[in-house]
Length: 240
Image (cartoon, rainbow, N blue to C red):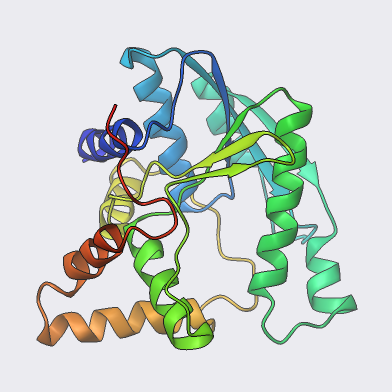
């Protein structure tokens, strides 16, 4: 199953020119199944991919006592992957100082900003995130229903201010495939620590797509296909 995921990741990487010779890629390692699987996929891809690149794993520690990184440290050590932990006060800011009722957006923005900074400080020119096909579709629906816009994140995003590219190699990978690999390989997936888990708008969209799929069998490939055909947010495949 991991080999299948690596194959899908390579397809996305090749189609959207995500990796170049000499890249140093920071993998945002949150401790969830998506980022851990991404770390392993790029670790093995690195061994045979024609373009040579290096990887480093970076965790933005939110400051919660429930957020334990010991198993992630051991995993990276066993793989021989450089691992950096950046301590922050995100949990305190979001839940105690700001007391956000919908904390996901602020938390994500803070983590992304810190990840970019730490990646640059450590000589990385690209950042890899574990967003998968389900995330693509959920973000698409959230944008339509909540903001009235046709939008989702792009496979590759260029940050001109920092000269760093964000890549998402898992855009063709289904969450159920990642879940199966994480279970099969017994990855050290971190226990959920955020009190908002299970109660977000994204969780609502996840359940909505599941319900739609009961009556519309092809709803998932149709959604992803619509995004690609709409040519939004850099989804058009540039042919060399």
